[in-house]
Amino acid sequence: MKVIDRGFDIALETFAYDVITEALKARAKFPADDNPTIAALAEEVGEAAKAALHIREGKSNDWWAVYAECVQVAAMAARLAIEGDVTAKAVPTAENCQ
Image 1 (tube, helix red, strand yellow):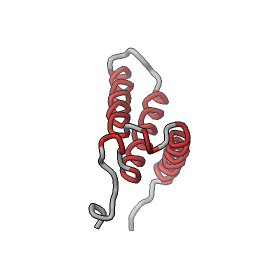
Image 2 (cartoon, rainbow, N blue to C red):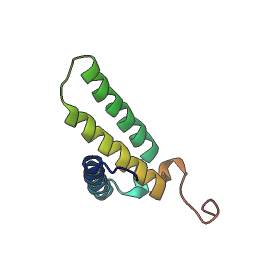
Image 3 (tube, helix red, strand yellow):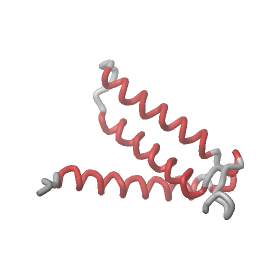
């Protein structure tokens, strides 16, 4: 019998909700037709790493900054997976979604 960690399950559900909310908000602000998604994703990954490293280095004690950046990373990853990046001509098409 597998033990279920409800604390993790609830946290994961909350994180997923936050990611969906952020992706929808970002899409409204930055439509897919002119959004450099790959660059935005890379920027968010860097910001998440920086926030975590600042905790390790004692420059910050704000885990919620890490959480917020991770939400943005996941939101941009979702947008890249679903919409692609028009500016990089890397988008889902009938030919590459078989």
